[in-house]
Every structure is written in C-alpha cells, then in structure tokens.
Length: 227
Ligand SMILES: Nc1ncnc2c1ncn2[C@@H]1O[C@H](COP(=O)(O)OP(=O)(O)OP(=O)(O)O)[C@@H](O)[C@H]1O
Ligand SMILES: [Mg+2]
Image (cartoon, rainbow, N blue to C red; front, side, top):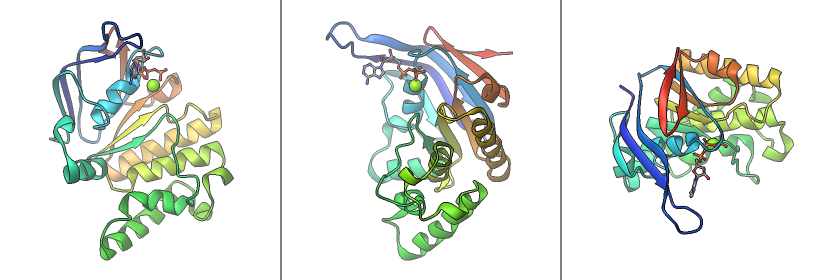
C-alpha cells in the first residue's frame, strides 16, 4: 500500500485559546501504488490538513500514517528532504512559485544543492517534464509572465521533478477555467500512466473527481468512499 492511514486524529488549536477543535477523527484511508483518488468535502472539513500530514508538513495527534513505507511525522533532516522528493510531490492550493526565478529555475530549485552529475540529470529531467506539460517554450519566463493555467502546470512540474511515487494536489484546477481545468486533468492522468505516479487530488470539481478511480468524501472528520 503506497498510502496507509489508520485511526488518524488531528485537532487544531482554537483561535481564542479554548479547547482544540477536532478536525480529523479516526480517519482511515488507503491508496495503492499507481492508483488515483479524489477527496471531496465542504470547505473547512480538513482536506488540506490531511494532505499536509501526508506531505510531512504537519504532525498527526494520534493514529498511524505510512507513505511509501515511511512515517512522515518521524522523518528528520536528510530523510525529510529525500521523502519530499522521492516519495511525495505537492501541488498547493496556491501555486507558491518563486517570483524572481524563471520557469526552469523554479522546477530545478529542489535540486540546486545536488552534486554536478545529479544536477545535470535534474536539468534534463526538468526539461522533459516541462515539455510533457506543454511548457517547452516558456522555460525563461517568470511566473508573473505566465497565465494561471501555465503557472499551475509549472507547479505540477516542480512537484514531479524528483520523480515521487505520489502526487498530492490541493485544488489543482480551482483557479482555472473549464478548458484549462480539463487540460490539466488530462495531463495529470497521463503522468499517472506514463510515470506510474499515484494521484491524490483534493477538489471541489465533480468533473475532476469523476476521472479518478476512487472518490472519497471527508465528513465529520472521516473519509467515506463514494460508490
Ligand atoms: N494552523 C491552523 N490552526 C488553527 N486552525 C486551523 C489551522 N489550519 C486549519 N485550521 C482549521 O481547521 C479546519 C480545516 O481546515 P482545512 O484547511 O484542512 O480545510 P479544507 O477542507 O482544506 O477547506 P477548503 O476547502 O476551504 O480548502 C478549518 O476550520 C480551519 O480553520
Ligand atoms: Mg483546503
């Protein structure tokens, strides 16, 4: 199992300093290697909270979480760097691209500290991914010079630059018009097939959700698989 979550609980501190608010309550979820799943659910139900825990950006309060055989909350230092490249890639709700860097530099940013040969490999890999995402003619542009759809595709390329086993995408099509959303969905599914990267997308779009193998709804802190 690529993602295996059992009895996950997570509360966030309440802003007034009162009792913490329970967001995830005994949540269970599994995703096979190479599989695709969508998570839907109302705003504030905890979808981004779950993704952050899977990406080792937040800690669970209790329960078991395994991603690619590793426990995200226990990783430190170099293990964490490795995990963020080889195990998970993240496309955030906002694109978070570096404004002063070009498209190619944004995708290469995670490998800047690598040794020379690894950097050369990263460079050709980055160009290949950007080409597959239809961005070969935009390598030298800055994010401010791109359309919303192009920016979102650059953040997908950056997430996949380390060839992770799992792509976590939080509302990847949220800011896009219908045509661009369909285009990006098609590209994600193609990357799933050609690179065997599993997809876990959080979305409000029924259209995107329907194209994933499984659809789960987050309600009352739990995930329920929809037929
Ligand atoms: N760092 C935090 N501290 C306190 N409360 C938080 C924190 N992060 C999230 N929350 C709260 O936890 C709840 C779940 O937030 P989360 O971002 O996971 O929701 P979501 O399902 O992703 O919503 P949306 O669809 O609007 O993106 C919300 O009520 C939010 O206010
Ligand atoms: Mg969210």
